[in-house]
Image (cartoon, rainbow, N blue to C red; front, side):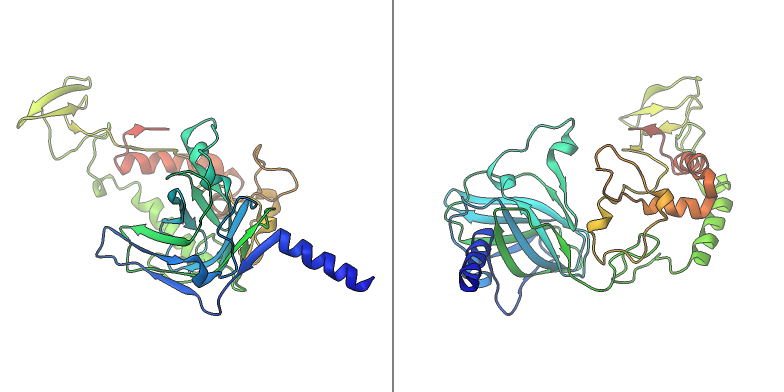
Length: 340
């Protein structure tokens, strides 16, 4: 009976997950001198036991580490050609597992309420952006990774590829948290990084002072350029100057409509499903600052480090005061058009 149960367990494991990896990782080195840099490797060099026909599987899981958060393209060469998606790693400089539904390679995106929701598919450890050629996953013999305009000669290491029928989920594989208590990347240093709440408070105080010093900026009250003025009419209008047509603001300053998409005072997007992000966060925001979202089930945790930082800065009235500061920044930086 014991041997029979063991046999059933082995059969179930084989049907549920097919994978193999070599002892060493395969490194993809990207050349910053090239507009597009990358390479392909044979599947057998990283996962020699994988089949070439993936029709019976619904997910592929890769175990990789990237030195950059820069977007890259990952694809497979099949009988019908090269088929790729765009990916972003949330945890650069860390090993992680990212599971990709194979329907993203086989089918066109399902229609959603807007273009972003149609093409963007967030996961726990990375972001998937749909695009490229779709088709059947038969005759899969190689994997390719490439990057457009790579910065600082980044690398991506790949050490495992697995196929499965069910979604095994994503997993952060390091012990050191990828994000600190301020929501910053925790696996390296960079210019402007905050190391203490005292430092953060000091920089906030400096901003409060500088944001009111209009001489540090060079824009009119409508967002026009103060260094070039023509006739003022009290209305927006157009005028041809040196063979070029310009918008002119009501005070007579040359005006370029300049805006950004999705302006909000909260500071970042919400971090969803934090209960599944093992070891990723040094510390999560207080539970009372967690955000309710119609797109997330009540059982999961949805947090915003941006909201937590605003709470540190302004206290309970953080939303109104942060909105005031957001408008001041837009005004001082010359953002004269609200795009969304």
